[in-house]
Length: 197
Image 1 (cartoon, rainbow, N blue to C red):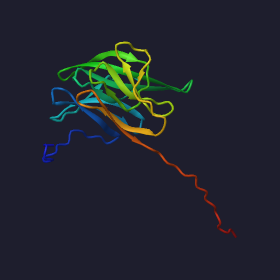
Image 2: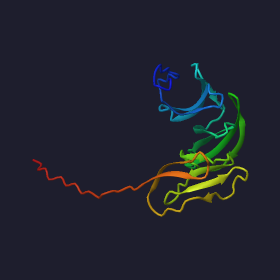
Image 3: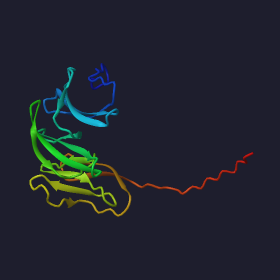
Image 4: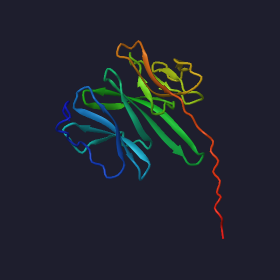
């Protein structure tokens, strides 16, 4: 739609599942997004034009669920996560993947890192690392350098309570903006005093 909210144009049609997390490529006319299928519990990355077309599945040969696309700040790389489930040993396999982007073309996968970043991650301001929310213990933010895959991520925050709901880097790359919260819960006892006959 236009910046004033007028003339919205529907770009996708999906009878089954949801279209999520759109990323606009640097050409300004191409969108990559995640399409999740509720029926098969599968997700794939789709590329479409803002002019509206049938769309193209990215990496159709991959047996994994591809999700959470995230375009680098310079527009040169597309990051996403892939997940598969091994029914024999009941284990999930998580991979973080990078593909090069040139104009409106998504290239082959250039890098695969055995790492579970979850859904909430951002590119660092210099595009050389990924900032992500740690999944173990109290949520904190970490930086994983892309030049040395497998190296230990650097911890950026050291909170000992609460949760991180969202975060992003400032435009100048000097600050992290973090939305934090506290989860409260109560223990409730419910008694059934109804008489039975």
